[in-house]
Length: 276
Image 1 (tube, helix red, strand yellow):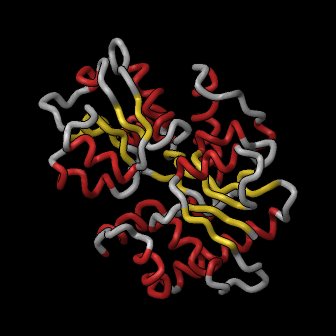
Image 2 (cartoon, rainbow, N blue to C red):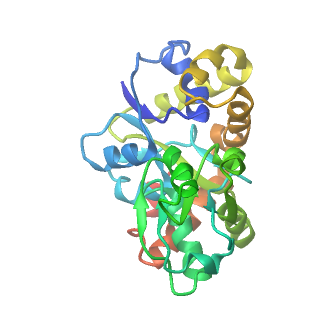
């Protein structure tokens, strides 16, 4: 079975047991490790992997071919993307007309940013530039761009780049909706045995929780020079109850995000029946 997910600690932690043949009955995997911008485009290409991690913001373009699985993804509280700046002004108005780096045009982070900016940045931003998320903070630090939209472990490390918080989009979303932040989804081709795949992924997650020490070497080998403390904080934040089961709040958050974005013309309208 072909699968694609990011090398980030939350994904490698969740999929360690499945990748290493520790889940009874699961097939061997051909794994592609890729940035979320790459997996979003793979899913929409028509010839993507059997199973992959994508942004929830990319779902409207792939739901007819791929089904959303109820486990393995990233939602939560206090884990949203951040808008960072190195300038002297650290408020929303300071972004008017500026050049902003984003991790993917179809990322949840960028979709949240667009929804937030439409309400909070007078006159709108200037140019958006897509770049790998691990290159954004250095680019803000050296002045190549005015501000950056960052995800993942950046919330733990941005101060080391001398950057300042302009907005926590997760906090904005939670205060506005009362719902968790939907970030990354696990999807599988509808032609496959979705119940079986769900069981394998959920089994892999439960194995990781029961035997966290077994995944350490694998997780750290893909952690892009993160310290062990930052790696563990990343896992603690992004692997949670919604990773095991989206539940009513998880599905509610996904629907709220995509319906609001569709109403503003940012994504195609989805068929609610395709979400479950």
